[in-house]
Length: 275
Image 1: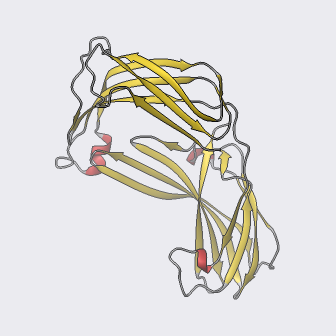
Image 2: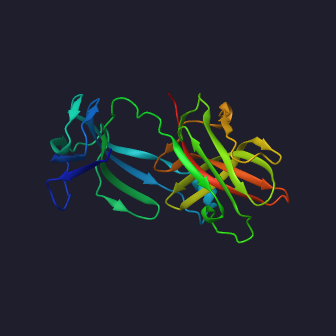
Image 3: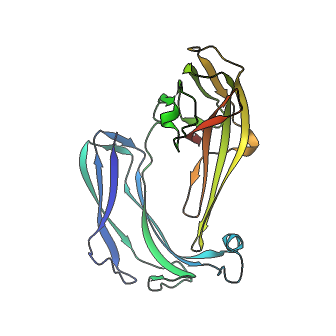
């Protein structure tokens, strides 16, 4: 299923004055029918203030960002619950540009430490949840990045029942060693939390291992399915979040340790939800 959403304004220059009506159309292109719980358009305006890292360190700047000042907040339901047919659908909209009580509107401005922005956002909750989709994988010297010539010839195949998991349910699947030129000492699953913080000053990304479990010990017979079963630690996981100023993501590494303690790993992105 492929779906694209686009907001088109009537005014080509996108310049509006207070009291005007912001109007246009919402263009939805989809290759299959979609059920939804309503389409809501939101217009927001903010003044964002950011401390300079010249006076404080970049990490301190992340935590000393002044709370944004909201100038505009308008919500408009453009369509009730229903179905969008396959093809191209256009929905007109019109919302008033009015400041919040005890606020006034300023001209759009993009500076280093002060930003005044206005934007339109679309909420389009779909009905139901896509069923879990198995994800097959294959690990070999050719799949490793960077490709290391010192890696012995081997091939590991397997499947995750889904890479989209509820935090209250285990990650499941299996893997099998098809062949390996040397003996394998251990196979491990490593759960990694990736936290990203950002603002006008830049972004900081930090990956932390939060769980490691061994699923194979010793020289495991070839072509034997090894179960994958990982329960997510309650205190160190949450639903995946991707927001403007921060992201909380999770990854899974399959680590293969050979008899001489040389190891290789393959990385997989996973999405955690609360269901």
